[in-house]
Image (cartoon, rainbow, N blue to C red; front, top):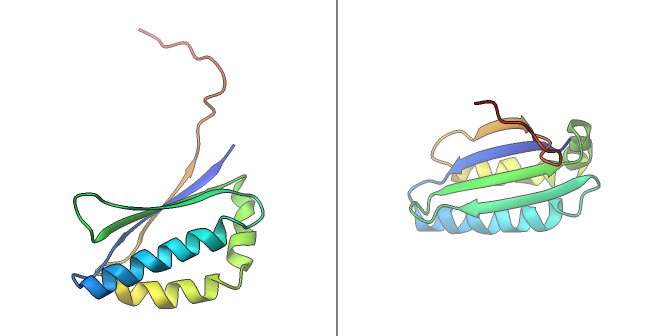
Length: 107
């Protein structure tokens, strides 16, 4: 089953910070999407609040994070991103549900 991390980031109220964060997230997606056992590494920006960003990291399994954390790029990410944020990152971990089989819905 796919293991998923969802991180919510909120940039400082400064157009330069917002632009830097946006570009760093795009770059990170381009780098991390190539990591072994990474299903997808998606970045999004809120359409209503330009300061609000979300990262969705999808891995084949929880242990697949070893490739992500072992990527040398990882050491550049937090030191660059954290000073651009207005509040701490909100990181959540999930196991995706298996939707490949029929289910019976109880009334």
